[in-house]
Length: 448
Image 1 (tube, helix red, strand yellow):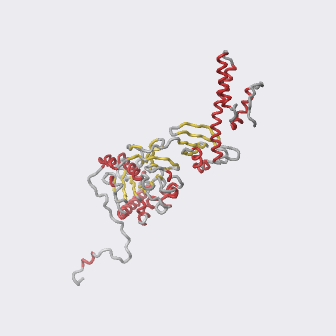
Image 2: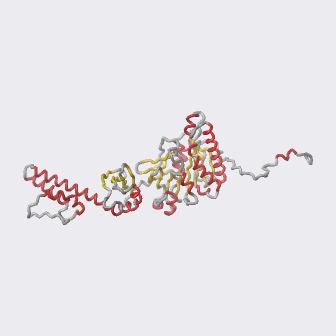
Image 3: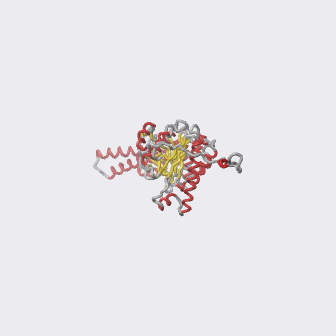
């Protein structure tokens, strides 16, 4: 179509160009574009209003001016997103997703598109990186009510959040950090019972874990929850929690960890025997039936999980706990700064569904942790991506230093400190092997 030109020497009905506006939005160009038409109409209306009494003609020019200008702005925005969709191959035949709404949000804005037949939300999710590169913004993609929502983030997540004690409703609802919309929590009793935290050295794993445990200890009843802490850095990271009333055991070597994990596994089997005996399906039903003999919820926290990879028995116990401990109220929170395929194996990934991925050294490690690239681009120091209930949320942990945690926790400390006592797992004896020789005490000299 040729450019529309208005020849001032010829009479032309200005309304004759209105039906062509929809087609002309794709070619907003020339001196007499819709924008120029709109501005000119408004100026003409003002001029006429200055010299002539108010007439219908003045209102007509105002209407054309405002309508044309608004249409120009809308068409320009639509063109931008049409270019985006075409650039990312997000169309079917000659049909493009239609933009229905652009809504301002606290983090930027949200676009709502309807999808043509044959295009799905997965098509958008597969093109997420291309969309982010085109818009030069971070994007979250959601599907709701047969519409695609593109959440566009125009500002970065705050880099530092001061620590605050945040109350949560769930018995094992953990405060992970902050996102764009406020504090982010994970309830381990709400369908996803175990959690993994993984990231390279300097990613902020210790700070995240310190904040999670401090809030848990300060806000939950030690008569409902007990902690088993395994710190394989010889107690350097989790030692500040050792004296807390809520902490039931503290292990700092692989040998101590194996003994404690074996005891926890025995407790799992004991609880299932109780459930079978009293016809209960899980800890919730059991505690409801026996209110004066309730079972504790227990959280097993293992810092630097990779140190156990040589301990095949310990890894086997952890895999069993991850697979079967959910219904009996025993949950895992494990962390590592060496996220490799040998550490985070298939059995662990299958049963530990809540994952906080912090900065990784490369994309290979990122794919091991969250199944795709991206963690290597994070800035570190508690900046992460939380995978939870099928969604991914960008988070920043709260900054809590060890001396601050000690000061907050001092009122929860107990005087008694024997929490590292353990009994090593009994090894199976070989048939015919004698375990002790106490029976020889019956002999006297050479006589029986």
